[in-house]
Image (cartoon, rainbow, N blue to C red):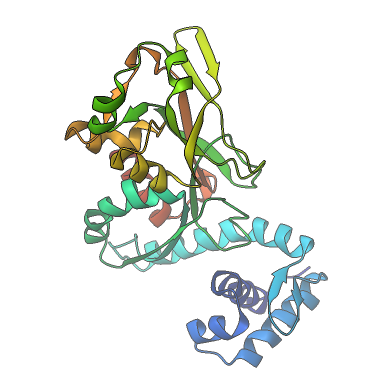
Length: 299
């Protein structure tokens, strides 16, 4: 198939539609009418011989063929953008819009409070942060980067371990004063614990305590169940009971005494934090700068 500029233009329109989520918003971003965007996509579908979108009156979604096509071409669009910036002799290569998809509490407690220096460093960059408990399809949803806790999720992007943070057992000083300090993990089974709901089962997670090679699993109970780390921290801080938040979130509360770590000898369990992005060879300048900055924050 011979290449012409119309193909590249069509792919650019496709990228805008996926990022914006609709033909109308893509047209606003590109300075085109909605019908012009629709015609450009139709011409691209005809050109490559596949149906890219499912369309109805309310929404558009990528077909399986459309998703695979975009996953293949999206990294190259980024490389073309970077090459154009370098060819223009611009010193501000880190610019444009960066769309990131992050775990809720990581966005609220770690990333959000530290974004001002990053954006001040790159004044031509705009950042769009979506806080989601589940990663979803990063490519189809038009994200540049995903940062999520837990085991690696299926993705066409590179998945890289960013950090491992310990799982701590904590309570407020008022709770410890009322109920005493547990001396062994089994002591926690009789305490009021703050339960975290497992979205896959609807039940709460059980707790593990690890010391070296030894792990003890216990059954916990309590009056309160939460669905996110923000609720867990709030309940711990209020004296509701004992919780197991991640160390990366509890550091400021432990430092100022609002939380106390319980059973510190049994805190060797860790939880992984992964970052998802395009291959380093195809990574844009803005993504590379962002990942370097996140690494700074983690350190």
